[in-house]
Length: 89
Image (cartoon, rainbow, N blue to C red; front, side):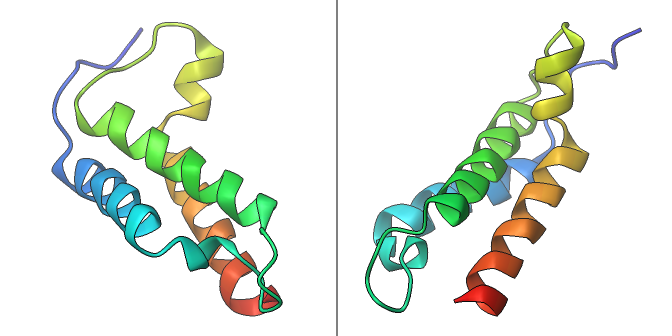
């Protein structure tokens, strides 16, 4: 059964924060050489999307988007992006 839809302020704040941060600091998505870091961009955009979707209270009915846009996926994508940006670059 699906969970009830409710606003999740922390997820919404994370999604909006990532949206603004990526817009204002696009160098977060580049390597030290100035090249685009596509895996980091994908992971941050995934975390942002999941945060915005769940933050406003939308819960997809199908299992695949529910899993990809769920709170555990949001945190996993964010941690993987931070690992990529901080440790690999």
